[in-house]
Length: 451
Image 1: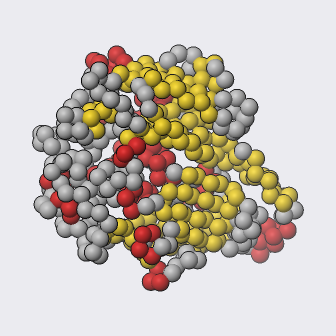
Image 2: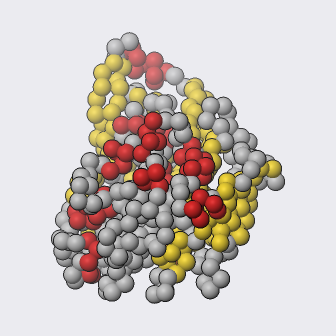
């Protein structure tokens, strides 16, 4: 059978006036693409959402070009988006259905998932995205400078349905991909955390335009297309994420969830102070460890993380010991065991790409300006490029086999930390994402999704 490659491009079905998506201005909170039912094979890994992104102040004017991102004058012009995941921070929910409405995959809090899997899933060259750090300007700072004018973007969708095997577009009966956009005050942030003298204007917003979905497809010859149209049975297997949310309110925190997933392969999570979410003053996509307030009342100081314990129905699994961070944080050295568990939750820990997560990136790397040195103690996760923590939780259950069954057994996690005696604990939001295998069974027009 002969085949040929062709690029398929699809515009949103809900373009609206001017084709602009600005949730707080146009009311268009969702971007919907409908991929037709065609006798083709779609290469999901090549799928990209392309378009133009821009930030505007409340009056519709652009922020000024920052000569110094941290001490911008006037400070109310210094708006930016997260430097690690960029425009992916705009996607709150990712839904993939067929044209008849059957749901294949649904990922909530997609932007917070990207905050974990993007920094720990790429090579160092991809992570810095070609940024020249000769003068100490990391990716966070250079991207912030770009926000004074619109820029083009091309986003992959990191969902297991698309990242697995090629998709039979005829058997799946076409696809409807829906992106639910995050609020403006989640995506955008001001310089307040770095400079408490900055004023905090309200009403800044983002907009996206010229949106197009592009994906490579493989088209068989006439005989192959007829065979695809006659085929009514099939099985598709892929790994996807389910999201869970919890609030940490104590330095001795215990949580318990019933995931109801079979073939569970990994769990990954991240933390953020709850008051930072949907707040112009802070970056809602950051992933620090637990924080307490400094003398100025700003959450700038890191609490000592003591240990993590993962359990299944009361039994420690996959590790029969606590993941202890207490001594490494006291001594200011790399937290190697904890880092290994978190990185293996996303990819193979033995990969050569892990060399970039080294002592140079694990230990403190402050800038000379005290305003820029946001933490007053060592950092224990990626910080070489943007000087901000990428502190993750997570474990891998089974990379090679069929995974662990959590359908009738609970998952438990204990997080122990130390809070200074003169401090009060501030609530932190904990996002957990459970990676498990899904199966879609196609049988004469009937579709069954097994998770």
